[in-house]
Structures are given as structure tokens and as C-alpha cells.
Amino acid sequence: MPVTKGFVKLKQDGQIIALGTAIVQEEWAGFVNVVIQEEHRGKGLGYAIMHALTDWSLENGAVRQYLQVIASNKPAVTLYQKLGYRASFGYHYRIKYDLQPFASS
Image (tube, rainbow, N blue to C red; front, side, top):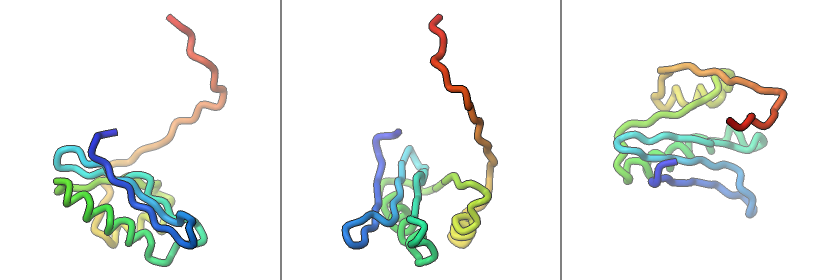
């Protein structure tokens, strides 16, 4: 992870209810681990986290942003679309069910 990184967390009654991480590398800010506790979704916390991460990124030299989101996460996709993000690339997961140590060469 690049050296320039910022973390935002929102608390209620001493408990973290939302958080996000931004990394800045050259002119790009990457937003990762944007998470809202399920019972607190739909209350504008995602917007608040994205706003804070954006402000921090601008203060640290970023002029462009990117993030990853699972396409089936409709609330997140909707939020990001409202904020002006557009899809550029797709990705998929690979799963290994029989985890074994790799053989030494």
C-alpha cells in the first residue's frame, strides 16, 4: 500500500458504524474498504465517508479517483453513480477451496 493513505471512521456510542480508506499515488486516489454497518445503511453515511475521503485526497494531491465495487451491490453502485463515478473495468473473483501449502522448488 502506498505511503500516503488516509482513514475515515464514523462512530456512534463508541462503536464504529462506517469506515473507509483512501490511498494517494501520484495524481490518483483509490478508495478501498468503504463499509457501512448494515443497520446504518441508507442514512447518508456512505456519502459522508466519500465526501471526507475526497477532501483528504484533494489535500494530498489527487486529481482523479477510482474505486472497486461489486456490481451486485446496488446501494453502493447507486451512490457512486450519483457521485459521478462510471464503470470502466470489470473484474471477477477466483476461489480455491482446497487450500494447501505450495511445494518448495
